[in-house]
Image 1: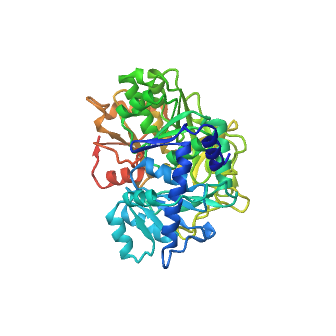
Image 2: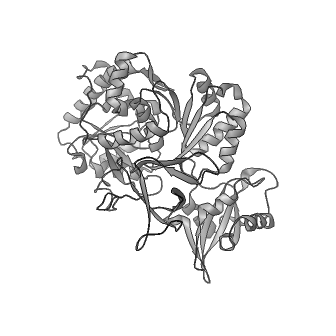
Image 3: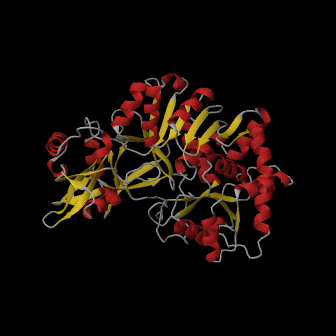
Length: 505
């Protein structure tokens, strides 16, 4: 169901239904339609006023690109939603990315207007000779107040691009890709069938809207007539208050937030009585997170979905240890090795065929190929097919070859899930002259008093892992390096070990 068609329909039938709510604003569906008309007038004028506008990436078909790079989740959500009903391509750029990455994608993709309050970004773009326009949130608000409303937003053609997303940005040069309206309609159809963004449902999606998980939550809620409540960052006390006050029944969040949510509910369970469903991205969700949520909120269901921003929603896990992913209807998976498809239960690279998949990456940002000639796509995840389901292993850097054996590092980490007095861990591959590489386990030391010693760790591993997968070296760090979304950075962890900044046990 198209986002704009639903917004217009709900605005006519239920004008006061909340559409977007955040710490610095609220919009009903009727408000969102009115807001979008003034917003587009301002954005369109900013593009048209440029004497020599940047040339948008050829993949957009000439549609001007507007990027939002602010910390306000509400402002980001309402700008993306507001432009969706017009001839416009929106992009969300995380202001916490390294400055050179922000400048790089703006220059490479031909972004014409950037909504940002960052003076260093404006200065850096000016130094590079960028001919676009930066507008602050304050200036944007002033212009919107004085603007004449544009025509009412309309349902756009299927093949028109409307979102530009990025595959990375924290540690490597971002790769840009586009979503057409047809692709996103296909993605919403899958989400609506399996992840329950139902009409009238109130969803809390805390975290930057530059995260694809949060951005998709905003779009899917509006595309199905629900209400999305956003937050710039996750605050357990504030989340509990909002869940109670707004009668939130559904939360969409990264795994680190799910764990913090369970901790908050343990302290004040009465605030979470309305909650029915938690949806989290990422496969192989640790059992400790599943158990923790089930213990404190036993009536709340948990869905851990697997997807890729480039490809869309692929499948989810809901039972057992969560390792086996059930593919959604219409999604096909294939496991390939160097010579093509491999037999069931053999590991290899995961390839997916899905209607929601982007055509490819924006050529100005990478020469990497997303899809093959037959439409199969890969983001280089590794996995295996087991009984019709998909079991993920990790990325290419998540597999170590030691003594001729392939060892999946995430599976090593999973073996330690639930070990008493052990906090977060990260398995890494370290070079070894005899075996090529060896598996090492790096433990976080802020888990509390009396953490397990080396002998206890080794004994635990030998009971749960094949001999070749048992770590041969053991280290401790005060704090494992993480992304802004809470994911542990394996490469940076290995570097800390090899440069002597971790304590060997």
